[in-house]
Image 1 (tube, helix red, strand yellow):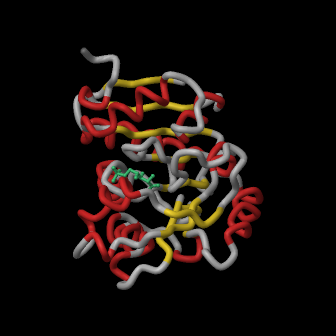
Image 2 (image 1 turned 90 degrees about the horizontal axis):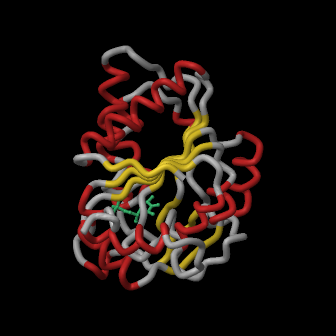
Length: 233
Ligand code: F6R
């Protein structure tokens, strides 16, 4: 596992985006695994910039998002909306090539992913160590499934909703074993509230920190800023 300490989110976004652009230019039909939330925003901004500067085309790219809320009230609250707003609507990706897990048939997602194989997976991490919405104690063998969000996740995510009551209580998420199938994984963690989760991840495998499964993967890079780095101070 490679750990890269960067000065800020912008630097992280630039570096990950340039790795993705390089990959797509080598393999135009690259399959990307994507996250929502605040962590990948700078990466998506840089990807849009690269597209507008004609450095890359997403015409043949396929994407699989990690997760989607179950039972959201407004379309605007869905992760599908988030992805369209923050990336897809600004680039030349084809709508049919973008995928989200379906709560009515979660396992179908694993089958689709197995057929395509994710080349490059982008992850954020929850303050409780979740990746996707695999909350603490999720089985390391889990496939795409419906999950209940923890109180902490609901409270962390309430910033994006009208009120905490509007935050969905369930989500459908790629499982930990689904995520582990990606050929290459990058995880972004910035800010003090991620430090203890990164500490647990680096301490070795434990079910209490779902992200710690990444210790088993042969090609993972963790991008940290100083605040999220448990090795600082
Ligand atoms: C979102 C996802 C989550 C987030 C995590 C961190 O698709 O899978 O695991 O990556 O909750 O969220 P932010 O980046 O908002 O701190």
